[in-house]
Image (cartoon, rainbow, N blue to C red; front, top):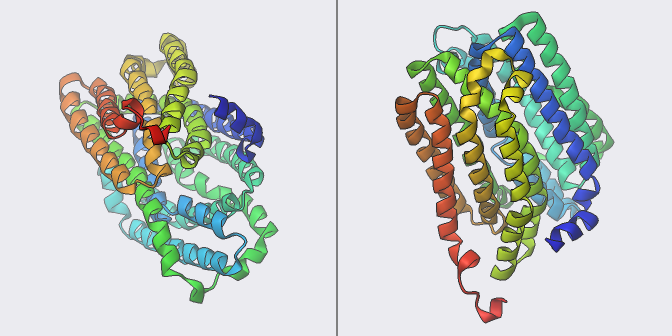
Length: 433
């Protein structure tokens, strides 16, 4: 992995790697402290309800910006020295997000009771939480729009600092609300914390307030809108399908096994998210840009197997360590009430290991703009995840959900290998060497 070492030493993204690491560590610490507070003040049942709200919020946020974040970043980076194209990009992105956010907020606010019944069942009355979320959503959209502008202009340092401060602010507000209002406080914190970062992002906007003059209604461009399309489609499929399927699976566990078991599954997902932040950060910062640069099967093969040889053994060893430390980890992050979560570790860890093996190769879809392949495979993944989860939950209880997680990503890995099999294992033509 000589290219990885060279990349670390020279690339601008890695010149702020210490800040990126600090951002990830801050997110993990904030997540663990929040989980601890939920475990102490709310309990297992509350964990399941919060999980459903978090998934719905994630999907709503993605729809509100129409998954356009990456498309905006890439387009701004491409046209940042062309004032006309830059104005068209900013104008199109701004009004696109403005109207889509308005529609999502309107639908959520006036269908709050329906959403409440879907997420929490008619036994709970948290419709007012959905209305608060609808009111907070435009601030989230503005924040992501600002982030995409800073990212497009390579203002990574400001971006990471805002993220760190935002995580700390969100954590303090979340802990205060959970302490004062328990489940209601946790749900309110979940929907307002992502939007509060906009208050900090205003500093970054003020520093570049001249950009506002570029946003004009008559500069909306259909060509720019079309360029957002593939990125938006990929982002929306991933960002909506998986959270929505998670809600369906969690609701099925609640109905067929019990709400406590759904809380255990949510707790296991949280632990998984914490350690996956590290590995996905490495993949995003190195693999995607590197795959975009290379144009030969030989280099692609070299990078994939190089990553497998250098990073995956460390990741695998970490997962093994987590498995044997689970009697300490579960009460540390949650409480003794969450002890049954330990039974879910094996299949979740195996699934996450296969998941990383798979997504390393699958990022080639993004790098080479193989949008159709990406969407079809992602849709297949969520369908298989749902079908296998329902079947295995009936057989094994809540453990069936984590077994389904492993089997789904194993099939995903198999399909990805099938698609890129010739590049990874086939004979490389002489001209491609």
